[in-house]
Image 1 (tube, rainbow over the protein chains, first blue to last red):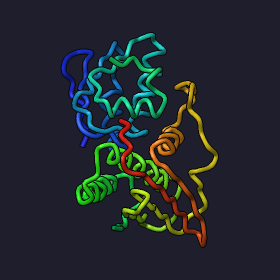
Image 2: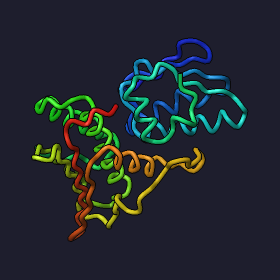
Image 3: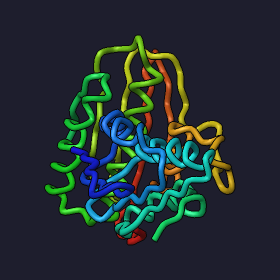
Image 4: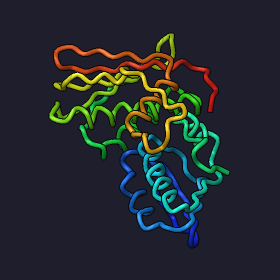
Length: 94
Length: 137
């Protein structure tokens, strides 16, 4: 299962498994975001191309208004998935 | 082991349980487990989306061989859709030109050691091999 938990204004935690079956839940959690955003990946265990697609759409939308998006606390295997998709150079990852 | 799954994105949770069961039985390491989860999800979802109008179910078969883990996904009564062709390279491709499907197949090619496609009598079959001992991740 996947959960997007609002920690505070401008900061969201992703938990669980962001696969193709969880995309709508992730999209719903992010659709109203228009300000600078930090997403905490510490408790995200898995992401597939469908989940990456949600983040790409968010990145594009925020970039249009020159709003920053930062991904933090990524586990090594999640960072590896970003590398596999050649996305590690497009996102600000800490 | 082999199981059939409904042609639905929501069926993914059952697919995940099936993969986890195999990983547990065969005591596979984390890198191999990640490769299996990603490769099977990407091909399964690809079949769900491209094989609309086909049979109700998609078969997933997992076995150990001398070469490592053999994954076979079979889609019945569908038009031909070869995920091995054309080869995609996303190196340097900007975000506004990315599609989840193409990106998934690009990842699968890097995760597995062999990827083959077969189409006969309206049966579409993707065969993947993941060797053991790859410690990337």
